[in-house]
Image (cartoon, rainbow, N blue to C red):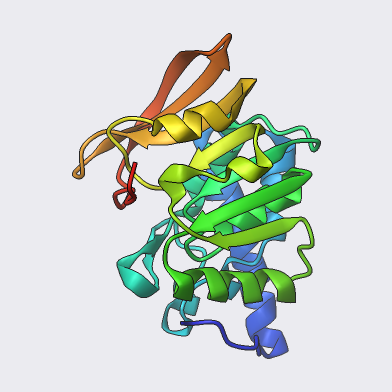
Length: 222
């Protein structure tokens, strides 16, 4: 578990803030991301709080970084792209499958009314919960469990995000998405996937492909 009380001198904090602003400009705006709410959230959330301490100096490089349990924290561009695809207005209840470091969770929490995030690794879920609590996110619930089963008690959800690769959308998750809702998910084999935005229209899937991507595989009973 990599959570630690955050300590940073003023020079380091200033450098990280500058790096975060440059990341938003060069890796997000310059690559075509336009939603002002998403860009503001990406500038607001301190990615260094979610990466292992040995990688703090790479917090705002546009790359995935290793975390515990052989998982990764996604690159900032992918976090912003997946978030923008949900088209959040602020009133939504979002189900996130794969809490991981909690960084994506924090970005969602900046933009949605409520975020429920499921993680199968207790160590990751606990670490993310502690960082999110330290950052005063009160609209997030972190749950340890099988993400392929979703969280029926909170259904239906306005939006869903699956932050792991799957060949198909688990049926239990699809059933928990509200009609008219949006699901963002990497679909495909282990080596490379296609990031898809799927809108549920009268129970049927209306998919749109965004970009090639590579995520760790979704693991679960479904």
